[in-house]
Each structure stands twice: as C-alpha cells, then as structure tokens.
Image 1: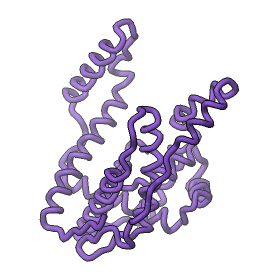
Image 2: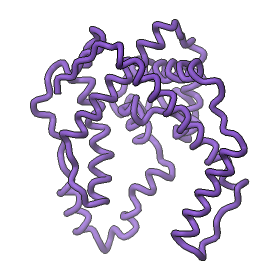
Image 3: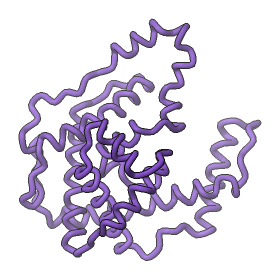
Image 4: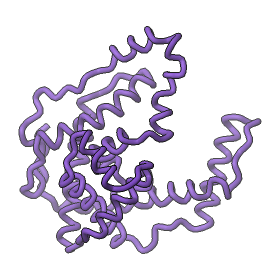
Length: 253
C-alpha cells in the first residue's frame, strides 16, 4: 500500500484498508497496550480526550469542479477518515487540532482528485477489469490476505460496497497512468539513491552517534520506493497547478 499515492487523493480508501490490516503499523499504533494493566486508567482518560469531528455547517454541496459537485456525503466520509489520523497525531504531539484548516485541506484534496480524474478521462485513459482484479489481488497480498475476495469481504464489513471499491481502484489506476503519461522515467538514478542514503546516514548518526547504521544495500529498496513516491508527487503537483489555472472551481466551506 505504501507504494501508492493514495494518502491525499483517496483518503477514505486508504483508511479502510489500514483498518483491515493486522500488520506492523497497527502494532505501532497500539504500542501503549503493552502497559495496559498498569496504565488502564490513564489510557481511558486519553481516550476520553479524543476530539470529535465537527461537521456542523458543512453544506450539501461542498465544492463544484467544472460543473461536477462534491457532495457533503463524499466530503464527510473522507473528512472523518482524515480526522482520525489527525486527531491521533494531535494527541501524540500535544498540539491542538485545527479542524477548520483540516476541512479546507480535505476539500482541496477532493477538488484536486476530481481535476485529475477529469484529465485522465479527457485523455481516454481506461482501466480493464483484468487490471482492476490484478490490483485487488496485489492489495490483498500487501494486506496479508488470501485473495481479493477476502479483501472485498473485509472492506464490506467496514461499510464499503464492492462497486465503491472497484471505483476507487479504477481511479487509482487511472491516476497512475496519468502520471506515467506525464513523466519519462520515475526510477531514481544510482546517484540519487546514494545522495538519499548519505543524507539518511548523516541523520542517523546525528541522532545517535553510537547507533549502527544499516548498509546501503539493506535500505536501498526503501530509498528507491521513497524517491519514486517523491517524483510522483512532484508530477501530480505540477499537473494540478496547471489544471487549476483553467478550471472552474468553487469551494463552499
């Protein structure tokens, strides 16, 4: 999952998949459970302090993009997913969560998503059923599930119907094709990988001079993946800026 640029454009989908995962990330989020017996009361107090999403005053039509409406329902599902992550981060850092700013970010991301999908459709970029099924099998494998059917079943339990999942997967694949059409080569060069590793090594040594830093070969796949994501994000950002110049966008928040 982390190889996909979904965190900004398909927040609700990512959140549902994350909820289905029993992997390392879930373990990290529940690290405090190791001291459950001794800190139960404190944990309950932290849980009570978790803020609630404020959706009061959200209009029925949150935004319009070239005549296409982004509805309150679409905004709400995305906002609630993003809010969960932001609220947890707020608790860990002690910084107050600015819901007004978060609403604007979510609305803006939904506008960007719509612009990109429109551009993909304008270029007649299509996704076959075979491609969608292969992507679902890949996602199921990444979530340590036996098959795409198991994944679809788990997502259904989270409140996401199969046609909604297929629609999100189709959007994701269209966006990947759009990025591919906008860039010659996303693969990082050996020089870029080495520079990123040198920076990583320097940061590790500054944090703990006695810590053993992994070798380049050990972390190379992760570095390459991160560099690809950065290049994809740059392509998206450049294209979004271009599309917004000519777009008719109204945000009602």
